[in-house]
Image 1 (cartoon, rainbow, N blue to C red):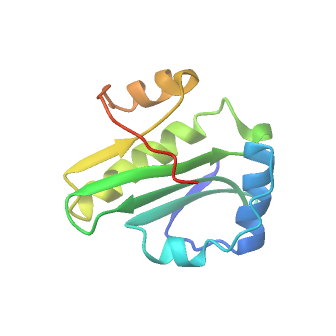
Image 2 (cartoon, helix red, strand yellow):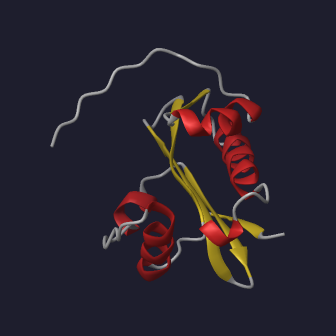
Length: 128
């Protein structure tokens, strides 16, 4: 079972590799400025290699937002995403967040409902 690390600050190469295999397209970006402003981020490591990741952004107050939940395709269906979400929830609560939001596609409804999320209405505008 992979080890979860709180705020591990993985290298840009590690995150870009995981992002590429998880989402099917290279991110090729520097995540350092994003992670430095996050409430928390959590990495799942197997044999010291990043195989899962979740970021919790926040508004600096009581609202936090799960972003970028990623698990390497070879490591899926082992409960890693569930562990990441639950640990992110625990740490966000511990760090003062009162609300935790997440947006997800229909195929992830089971995961997020099992972790305690309930449906809400929301709005979205694509800016670019």
